[in-house]
Image (cartoon, rainbow, N blue to C red):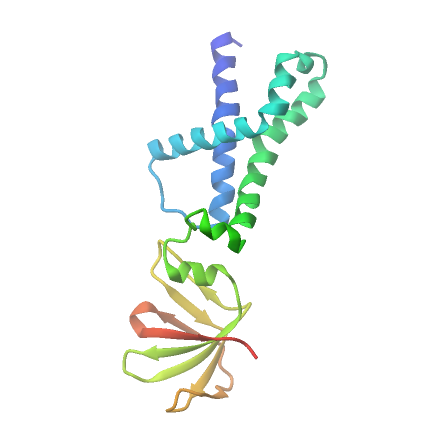
Length: 196
């Protein structure tokens, strides 16, 4: 293998792959708009540099000392940690931190809409849906329910459906119903109520 080829591989491994891994893990938590190749490349390089900076206290001594030459097996584990394990952990740690309310004062939350923020909490609740024909229908948003998020239009699947009285209070659950799917074109707005 030529030196130029080896250098290209090392640049890819250390300054592209970690960022790519982090972006893929992040997209599991927050859906991302499909990026073009140029933007994706810049993002991968940026987050790889962040990974390099965070791990530099252990990575720089590791390579500067030449320790890796005498310990090829441990070097392989280190490269795996540097390129896969750590870049996987950074988005998980960041997701944990941004869910802490004290962080709200310092950062812009990564939710593009209020709807995405709400469904991202994954909290069970009752929903009173005001339909376009001025009628109302109730539903339970639980662990078996689902809501689409950006960049797709907001739609929701409610696992339980309830009749609603004229005053807006919930009536009995609709028997033998397997749930209800609503798109944004079906309703004016939705009210949310805590589970009791």
